[in-house]
Length: 250
Image 1: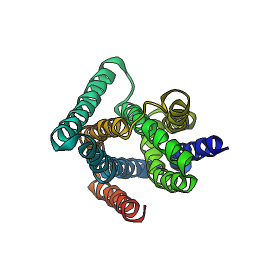
Image 2: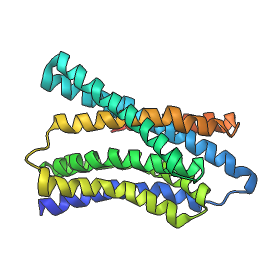
Image 3: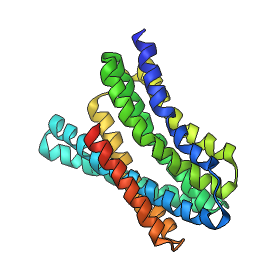
Image 4: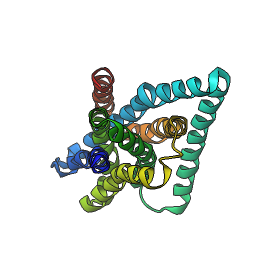
Protein backbone atom coordinates (compact mmCIF):
# COMPACT_ATOMS: atom_id res chain seq x y z
CA UNK A 1 0.00 0.00 0.00
CA UNK A 2 2.90 2.35 0.76
CA UNK A 3 4.22 1.76 -2.78
CA UNK A 4 0.88 2.67 -4.41
CA UNK A 5 0.56 5.82 -2.28
CA UNK A 6 4.14 6.89 -3.08
CA UNK A 7 3.61 6.34 -6.80
CA UNK A 8 0.32 8.26 -6.73
CA UNK A 9 1.95 11.23 -4.98
CA UNK A 10 4.77 11.30 -7.54
CA UNK A 11 2.32 11.08 -10.45
CA UNK A 12 0.18 13.95 -9.18
CA UNK A 13 3.28 16.13 -8.66
CA UNK A 14 4.60 15.37 -12.15
CA UNK A 15 1.39 15.81 -14.10
CA UNK A 16 0.68 19.16 -12.48
CA UNK A 17 2.63 20.52 -15.48
CA UNK A 18 -0.56 20.01 -17.49
CA UNK A 19 -2.31 22.64 -15.36
CA UNK A 20 0.21 25.17 -16.67
CA UNK A 21 -0.51 24.18 -20.26
CA UNK A 22 -4.16 25.20 -19.87
CA UNK A 23 -3.21 28.86 -20.44
CA UNK A 24 -3.26 28.11 -24.17
CA UNK A 25 -7.07 27.94 -23.97
CA UNK A 26 -7.26 31.61 -22.98
CA UNK A 27 -8.34 33.72 -25.92
CA UNK A 28 -6.24 36.75 -26.84
CA UNK A 29 -6.76 39.41 -29.47
CA UNK A 30 -4.31 39.24 -32.36
CA UNK A 31 -2.38 42.31 -31.22
CA UNK A 32 -2.06 40.91 -27.68
CA UNK A 33 -0.53 37.56 -28.65
CA UNK A 34 3.05 38.84 -28.80
CA UNK A 35 2.59 40.55 -25.44
CA UNK A 36 1.42 37.26 -23.92
CA UNK A 37 4.29 35.30 -25.49
CA UNK A 38 6.85 37.84 -24.24
CA UNK A 39 5.47 37.80 -20.69
CA UNK A 40 5.26 33.98 -20.70
CA UNK A 41 8.82 33.53 -21.93
CA UNK A 42 10.26 35.98 -19.42
CA UNK A 43 8.15 34.38 -16.68
CA UNK A 44 9.50 30.92 -17.55
CA UNK A 45 13.13 32.09 -17.62
CA UNK A 46 12.68 33.65 -14.16
CA UNK A 47 11.25 30.34 -12.92
CA UNK A 48 14.10 28.31 -14.44
CA UNK A 49 16.85 30.51 -13.05
CA UNK A 50 15.06 30.90 -9.71
CA UNK A 51 14.57 27.16 -9.17
CA UNK A 52 18.22 26.57 -10.05
CA UNK A 53 19.76 29.17 -7.73
CA UNK A 54 17.38 28.78 -4.77
CA UNK A 55 16.86 25.02 -4.86
CA UNK A 56 18.85 22.77 -7.19
CA UNK A 57 22.34 24.26 -6.92
CA UNK A 58 22.63 25.11 -3.19
CA UNK A 59 20.97 21.94 -1.88
CA UNK A 60 22.78 19.61 -4.26
CA UNK A 61 26.16 21.27 -3.66
CA UNK A 62 25.63 21.07 0.11
CA UNK A 63 24.95 17.32 -0.10
CA UNK A 64 28.08 16.73 -2.21
CA UNK A 65 30.21 18.82 0.18
CA UNK A 66 28.79 16.85 3.09
CA UNK A 67 29.44 13.48 1.46
CA UNK A 68 32.80 14.11 -0.22
CA UNK A 69 34.37 17.01 1.64
CA UNK A 70 35.06 20.53 0.40
CA UNK A 71 37.62 19.69 -2.32
CA UNK A 72 35.89 16.80 -4.08
CA UNK A 73 32.44 18.25 -3.39
CA UNK A 74 33.26 21.50 -5.20
CA UNK A 75 34.90 19.65 -8.11
CA UNK A 76 31.94 17.27 -8.59
CA UNK A 77 29.48 20.16 -8.37
CA UNK A 78 31.41 22.25 -10.88
CA UNK A 79 31.81 19.39 -13.38
CA UNK A 80 28.10 18.46 -13.23
CA UNK A 81 27.08 22.09 -13.75
CA UNK A 82 29.48 22.59 -16.68
CA UNK A 83 28.28 19.37 -18.36
CA UNK A 84 24.74 20.78 -18.17
CA UNK A 85 25.88 23.98 -19.92
CA UNK A 86 27.69 22.05 -22.65
CA UNK A 87 24.73 19.71 -23.15
CA UNK A 88 22.16 22.45 -23.77
CA UNK A 89 24.53 24.28 -26.15
CA UNK A 90 25.00 21.05 -28.09
CA UNK A 91 21.27 20.30 -28.19
CA UNK A 92 20.50 23.81 -29.40
CA UNK A 93 23.02 23.57 -32.26
CA UNK A 94 21.75 20.09 -33.14
CA UNK A 95 18.16 21.31 -33.33
CA UNK A 96 19.19 24.28 -35.49
CA UNK A 97 20.73 21.90 -38.03
CA UNK A 98 18.09 19.17 -37.91
CA UNK A 99 14.84 21.13 -37.68
CA UNK A 100 13.08 23.42 -40.13
CA UNK A 101 10.55 24.41 -37.46
CA UNK A 102 10.39 27.94 -36.07
CA UNK A 103 12.60 29.21 -33.27
CA UNK A 104 9.58 29.28 -30.97
CA UNK A 105 8.89 25.59 -31.58
CA UNK A 106 12.54 24.68 -30.96
CA UNK A 107 12.43 26.65 -27.73
CA UNK A 108 9.41 24.68 -26.54
CA UNK A 109 11.14 21.38 -27.33
CA UNK A 110 14.34 22.46 -25.54
CA UNK A 111 12.25 23.44 -22.52
CA UNK A 112 10.54 20.05 -22.61
CA UNK A 113 13.85 18.13 -22.76
CA UNK A 114 15.39 20.21 -19.96
CA UNK A 115 12.36 19.79 -17.73
CA UNK A 116 12.10 16.05 -18.44
CA UNK A 117 15.66 15.74 -17.11
CA UNK A 118 14.63 17.89 -14.17
CA UNK A 119 11.46 15.91 -13.41
CA UNK A 120 13.07 12.47 -13.63
CA UNK A 121 15.21 12.77 -10.46
CA UNK A 122 12.40 14.73 -8.80
CA UNK A 123 10.18 11.69 -9.34
CA UNK A 124 12.76 9.49 -7.66
CA UNK A 125 13.04 11.89 -4.72
CA UNK A 126 9.25 12.21 -4.33
CA UNK A 127 8.72 8.46 -4.48
CA UNK A 128 11.49 7.62 -2.00
CA UNK A 129 10.34 10.34 0.41
CA UNK A 130 6.68 9.25 0.19
CA UNK A 131 7.62 5.60 0.62
CA UNK A 132 9.46 6.40 3.86
CA UNK A 133 7.04 9.05 5.17
CA UNK A 134 3.83 9.90 3.28
CA UNK A 135 3.48 13.30 4.99
CA UNK A 136 7.00 14.29 3.98
CA UNK A 137 6.30 13.07 0.44
CA UNK A 138 3.09 15.14 0.24
CA UNK A 139 4.91 18.30 1.35
CA UNK A 140 7.58 17.69 -1.28
CA UNK A 141 4.90 16.99 -3.91
CA UNK A 142 3.15 20.31 -3.17
CA UNK A 143 6.43 22.20 -3.57
CA UNK A 144 7.18 20.37 -6.83
CA UNK A 145 3.65 20.92 -8.19
CA UNK A 146 3.97 24.62 -7.39
CA UNK A 147 6.89 25.05 -9.77
CA UNK A 148 5.74 22.40 -12.26
CA UNK A 149 2.73 24.55 -13.18
CA UNK A 150 4.81 27.45 -14.55
CA UNK A 151 7.13 24.89 -16.16
CA UNK A 152 4.08 23.63 -18.05
CA UNK A 153 3.51 27.18 -19.29
CA UNK A 154 7.11 27.41 -20.53
CA UNK A 155 6.60 24.33 -22.71
CA UNK A 156 3.02 24.78 -23.92
CA UNK A 157 3.05 28.48 -24.88
CA UNK A 158 5.93 28.49 -27.39
CA UNK A 159 4.86 25.18 -28.95
CA UNK A 160 1.22 26.25 -29.29
CA UNK A 161 1.98 29.62 -30.86
CA UNK A 162 4.51 28.01 -33.21
CA UNK A 163 2.22 25.18 -34.38
CA UNK A 164 -1.30 26.46 -33.52
CA UNK A 165 -1.94 22.95 -32.18
CA UNK A 166 -3.35 22.65 -28.67
CA UNK A 167 -3.01 18.87 -28.88
CA UNK A 168 0.71 19.11 -29.66
CA UNK A 169 1.35 21.62 -26.87
CA UNK A 170 -0.48 19.54 -24.25
CA UNK A 171 1.21 16.32 -25.41
CA UNK A 172 4.69 17.82 -25.06
CA UNK A 173 3.76 19.16 -21.61
CA UNK A 174 2.43 15.72 -20.64
CA UNK A 175 5.69 14.07 -21.77
CA UNK A 176 7.66 16.39 -19.51
CA UNK A 177 5.40 15.73 -16.52
CA UNK A 178 5.22 11.96 -16.99
CA UNK A 179 9.00 11.80 -16.53
CA UNK A 180 8.35 12.23 -12.81
CA UNK A 181 6.28 9.05 -12.18
CA UNK A 182 8.53 7.19 -14.64
CA UNK A 183 11.46 8.16 -12.44
CA UNK A 184 9.53 6.84 -9.46
CA UNK A 185 8.76 3.50 -11.15
CA UNK A 186 12.38 3.00 -12.22
CA UNK A 187 13.50 3.85 -8.71
CA UNK A 188 11.26 1.14 -7.32
CA UNK A 189 11.95 -1.58 -9.90
CA UNK A 190 15.62 -1.19 -10.72
CA UNK A 191 17.48 1.48 -8.81
CA UNK A 192 16.30 1.51 -5.21
CA UNK A 193 19.52 -0.20 -4.05
CA UNK A 194 21.80 2.05 -6.08
CA UNK A 195 20.26 5.52 -5.89
CA UNK A 196 22.08 7.78 -3.45
CA UNK A 197 21.52 11.39 -2.50
CA UNK A 198 24.90 12.14 -4.12
CA UNK A 199 23.81 10.71 -7.49
CA UNK A 200 20.55 12.67 -7.42
CA UNK A 201 22.47 15.81 -6.46
CA UNK A 202 24.84 15.42 -9.42
CA UNK A 203 21.89 14.98 -11.80
CA UNK A 204 20.14 18.05 -10.38
CA UNK A 205 23.30 20.17 -10.68
CA UNK A 206 23.52 19.11 -14.32
CA UNK A 207 19.89 20.16 -14.73
CA UNK A 208 20.67 23.49 -13.06
CA UNK A 209 23.37 24.13 -15.66
CA UNK A 210 20.94 23.24 -18.44
CA UNK A 211 18.13 25.48 -17.19
CA UNK A 212 20.27 28.55 -16.48
CA UNK A 213 21.98 28.33 -19.88
CA UNK A 214 18.66 27.73 -21.63
CA UNK A 215 17.12 30.72 -19.85
CA UNK A 216 19.97 33.15 -20.58
CA UNK A 217 21.10 32.09 -24.04
CA UNK A 218 17.84 30.92 -25.64
CA UNK A 219 14.72 32.13 -23.84
CA UNK A 220 15.84 35.68 -22.98
CA UNK A 221 16.97 36.60 -26.54
CA UNK A 222 13.72 35.19 -27.93
CA UNK A 223 11.63 37.24 -25.48
CA UNK A 224 13.74 40.33 -26.18
CA UNK A 225 13.16 40.01 -29.95
CA UNK A 226 9.51 41.05 -29.55
CA UNK A 227 10.65 44.52 -28.34
CA UNK A 228 7.98 44.63 -25.65
CA UNK A 229 10.12 45.44 -22.62
CA UNK A 230 7.14 46.33 -20.43
CA UNK A 231 5.78 42.78 -20.74
CA UNK A 232 9.25 41.26 -20.49
CA UNK A 233 9.76 42.92 -17.10
CA UNK A 234 6.22 42.04 -16.02
CA UNK A 235 6.83 38.33 -16.69
CA UNK A 236 10.15 38.49 -14.87
CA UNK A 237 8.55 40.19 -11.86
CA UNK A 238 5.74 37.63 -11.58
CA UNK A 239 8.24 34.77 -11.91
CA UNK A 240 10.50 36.21 -9.21
CA UNK A 241 7.56 36.71 -6.84
CA UNK A 242 6.46 33.09 -7.31
CA UNK A 243 9.99 31.79 -6.75
CA UNK A 244 10.31 33.82 -3.53
CA UNK A 245 6.90 32.57 -2.37
CA UNK A 246 7.93 28.98 -3.07
CA UNK A 247 11.28 29.49 -1.33
CA UNK A 248 9.93 31.00 1.87
CA UNK A 249 6.68 29.00 2.14
CA UNK A 250 7.84 25.52 1.13
